[in-house]
Length: 154
Image (cartoon, rainbow, N blue to C red; front, side, top):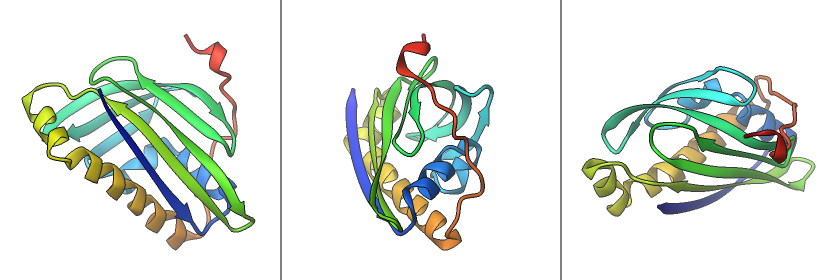
C-alpha cells in the first residue's frame, strides 16, 4: 500500500473549497485520468478512471463527512484505496486543503507507475488543478452540506 500526502493553500474561503469538493461529478474537470464520477447515493459514487495506464471502474463509499472540515472515503470494490481530505481555515478568504490517500497498485502497470512516481505526480497535479479551477471561479458551483457520521457507515 502506497501513501500520498499533498496539501495546497487556496485563496478562497474554506466553505467555498469544501462545497466545490463535494461535487464529485465535477472531478473530471480537474483530476487527470478521471473520466467520470456518478453519485449513486449521498455516500456512494461510481468512478471510471485511468490508473497507471489501465482503465478501471470502481465504487467508493464516504465513510465520514463533516462540512467545512473533512471527507473520508474508501473503495468498496475494484482497486483498493482510501483517504481523507481535510479543510483548514487560514483566514476569511483563504484555506488549506490536505489530501491523504492510500493506494494499493493492482497489476504490473500500476505498480510501475507507482514506483516511478507517476501516481504521486498525478495527485500533486490534481491538487494544483483544483486550486486553479476554484480560484479562477472564485465561488463554488454548489455543494452538499450533509454530514456522514463515521459510525453510520458499514
